[in-house]
Image (cartoon, rainbow, N blue to C red):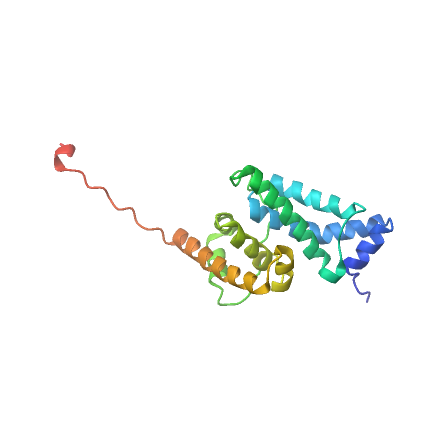
Length: 202
């Protein structure tokens, strides 16, 4: 049984001109990068553009990946994050249209007692995606990286350029906010009728 090549080995081969190595990296990392961008922006077209730009950056000679500073996947998520932040800065308003995820699959629940996962199963992916997009950017990032793409805290901290403790605290707060939003969706407050004077009804 052959051991799959590491991302770093594939990158070394790619830099030596091996097109198949590039295609292997693309097949392995394209979907997670696309999903991350989609969950950050809500726009499939932006997700496609950012994912393409990330791989263009990878094939440039000046690509600054350093294996001593983290994984190749983490490095590419970092590039995607910078491009997403640039997009959000330019637009200032999150795109509400073009929400087709193109086959986005729900993340696996991390435990049987996962309230967000339970609500996701009850309400569906679209509701969760809208709830994630409505989070402040710093919380949206950690949910997309840790809960949806399953990066560990250290990898997420490297992508975000912050301490591991910050990732933990943001993720804790983000999950609480998500739970609130999803519970509101499941249990909306009843509309309070506005009573009109009897005279207005005559």
